Length: 520
Image (cartoon, rainbow, N blue to C red; front, side, top):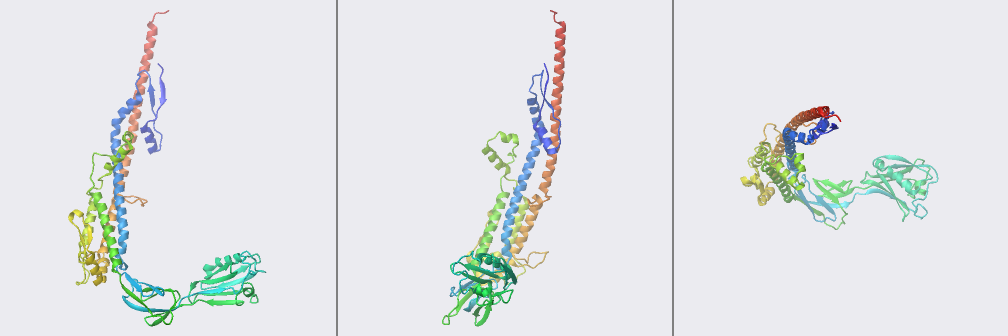
């Protein structure tokens, strides 16, 4: 019986070549005197040998899932820390509201620097931009933006608040082309130009208001009367300025280049000029307790969401009988079954994690502790302003007594602000730091510990503990894969030798039978 030699390429060989970048020994698939299914036999023999490799692959997958869980927790911590940053700022607590007795005349907005109280304001004039308009039609009344109105090469000088430029005007320039040339330089001059076809006139305006706003137009040739004869402006050279807004605040008159301006920390917008018979507008500034309460509520809600997320992860049940599936196991299962299996396999990878649980404990101590650096008469803890923790089973969830908080903000707004924002800049102790300042630092510390454990997806070189473990497992997988490929090749060589020996014996037997058979 002849020997048929067919090259084979097993999964182990393929994987080994891929991972090591080289070419491995490829054995032979034999069919011959034995009549045995060699591939099937080798596959069965390798199943047991491959079990340690499956264990390593599952270990690697578990570590990767655990790393992803840590990074997900860090993402939640980062989101909370970003929102917490504003709670360190005094502006989050010194929120002022403003009311105007006539918003048609002037509107007002309070800022952290606004002084509480009642003020009067009168608008005597509004700030205006410098402006200039053609006194007559510029294209014989045709209203044609494509009309050519320049008879020869000319140079127009345009000067505004920002600077001066010279613009070349050519006989081929249409009205629209002239407008484009002027506007192309508006960032350098502060002057813009437009053309209205219905009115057949040019319009010039400054980009700002106030007395510094300016439109100065003249031709390079003093004898050139283009501005007057073509642009239909009042003279051969024009120089126009804008106007300031004039207001009287608490009896004191002032001028402002814009209709939006600030006085005594209050931001005003003047909308119209008052007549002499109108009363002054009354503006009232007061503490906006509702806005501050909203800020504090938002902080509490986000904190509660964070600890719920972390507590849920650290108390998740661990199903140790559900290891990550191998590729062969996946092939034998339905998609829904695979999904349910992996949900259990991923569950509990951070159960009772010491990094996260100790971090939450520090959060609770921070929130329930006193701020020691404040005056003895000041509020020094969250409980004094109506913020408390729930039961032990709720893992430190915060609750707000809004009535108590509102009273604290009404009576002592600065004390509430200092309770959250105090910072003594002492790097050795934190007891004198405000609640938000201290909590921000604790969140940052916890994030650093998690990053040290699991790394960051944004990091170019990941030197975290878990990533080092994963790299170690990868090396073990590579070594074991190579060893299994050698074993598999050895099995095929052994079966090849067996088939060769059996074929040799078969040939010898045939020769003997021919030798002893009767000669015809």
